[in-house]
Image (cartoon, rainbow, N blue to C red; front, side, top):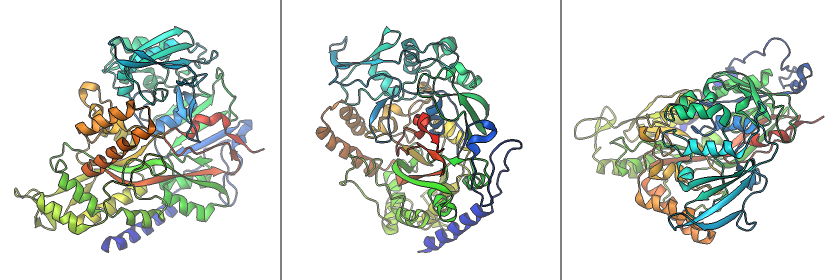
Length: 578
């Protein structure tokens, strides 16, 4: 096939780009050093300080805990703040900012009636008594109550709309105890992953003045080095927008003392330059969540694997393409299905990733317990693709591109994060594959901060947006598939249903599955969700990602999770082998 040769040429071009990239020189003065072989030497002990320098491919668009979704933000927040609960590296739900995980069995979660007489729940959480903000102000239940008010106000545009709809009342029992009152019975009642405390003493006046403008005026944007914003093991001491964050130990941290005095997060958006930086000693490690692409990591391992620990962690992150259903071309299901039949995802997996990133057939990972087999599988079939396009009215050609009855070309635009060489390579492969059936695919990429902070969030991409979703174990896909989660100006662009999916049956399944406590009864609902997902193909699944962690030999205690919750949530366990 023509495009297999095309992939081969592009792959060799990518390797040449990686090898020829200029390294960013180490900073002057005390800093990282390299040995003659290029491996980073003991930079964690520079100038008597224990410093860890981490390279990542994105910079957070905002550091506000509950506004906007971006992996880079949550990677940083793992060291600065903590949500109430999270999943650990063994995929168990655990407390971050609670003393005991509430369950029906231990009596901290109970069934109750709502004021309207409906079945609901009351879930009680207790905060650690010595939790303190970085400026010394005690962290109390009132900070959680304020955060709940911020999220519940639809003008704010906060993440997790449904959590705030569901939690109809927040009861402050005392300084360290609060009760969430839910208006329905749900199986994931104790998964409070999106509720982060907000410092009431710094943020409340700003929020109350103008909730709609709060996302722009928040102290998290105007003064992120204010220690009163943070209560985790670290606080921010210095930052340069789009470039780096420097973290130092939080003197008021109530938990286990972290080993490193300083953590430096460096944003290196060009993934080829990322490799050059670790070899030059500018950084000590590359974050698996946001670092080298798998093909680069495989090449790196062959050339430098004896000097670093290279870990490949399969998990719940999948690369996909959101299709903007407001686009009249993509509104036709036959065109969407034709695109799926036209692309060869298996060739992409085999040629670019040595088969280590398997084809994704839906949004539910085969590593979990809810993956269904009885769903539509799209094999590479250009003949079927051509027939579907003919049926959709794109049967004539002009200069090799299909046109409709009005002589308008079948032209679409694809966007992704600029500087990510593998994504750019995949785009070119897709462009070539779609050209074979007469679709003109144009590439327009943006910096990750703009792409995630504005373009996808406000649904400003005209046709296709390629990026990755990371999920938590058994996470119900409400935010990405339910119609109430479509971002609009009226909800200040909250929600993650960027495609604009509006399918009543999907909405009901999501609502029903959340309220079913019996896992066995949830199974057929999970299957039907995946069937609709693959039949409608409003989102095109590409492949399941395996995250490569490039670590120095001396770093111990880092455990890749393979899911949405970052490794940095256990930063206090990271240490240096003496």
